[in-house]
Structure formats: structure tokens, C-alpha cells
Length: 104
Image 1: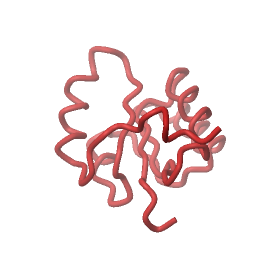
Image 2 (image 1 turned 90 degrees about the vertical axis):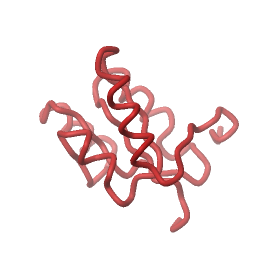
Image 3 (image 1 turned 135 degrees about the vertical axis):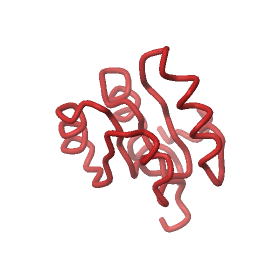
Image 4 (image 1 turned 60 degrees about the horizontal axis):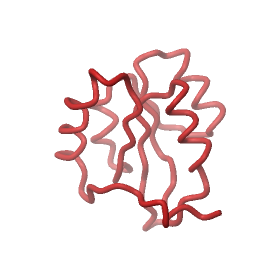
């Protein structure tokens, strides 16, 4: 578990939670360690449902959390390019999870 890939979800709305529910516990050698959403109500609900302790309302703080190795950005389209560039600069092991990484 210590070498697991630490995943961060930015955007805990409908689409973000669909991805988190589908992948949480089913991706080999990865675990959801950080949640981020600017809306505290949605963030609190996601934290409770997914059991993730580290939460942020500012994505710039979330992506530099020491536990984060990869990030999934599930936000409105206008916010994606800026956040995507920031997360690539922040990660020690940038990359995406492939469908073959999901355990059925």
C-alpha cells in the first residue's frame, strides 16, 4: 500500500462522483487520497461517501499535497486547461490510468 499511486479528484459534482464511485477500490495499486471542490457542501458529501480525509476547496493546494501522484479533473470545460497545466507541473509521476489498470 505504501507504493500505491495517490489519486486526487478535482470536481466532486455529478461527473466526478460517477468516476470516483466506479474506480474507488477497483484500480490496481491506486487509491483516492484527496478530494477538491470549491463548493463546501458537495465536498463534505463526497468526503463522507468516499471516506477520504484530505479535502481542499482550492485546486492549487490539492495538487501539491504530498500524497498526490495523479489527478482527475472533472470540472466545467472552461476551467480544465489552466488546472491541467498546473497538475502536470506538480506531479512527480504524471500520467493517466489506463482501462487495463481497473480490476473487475
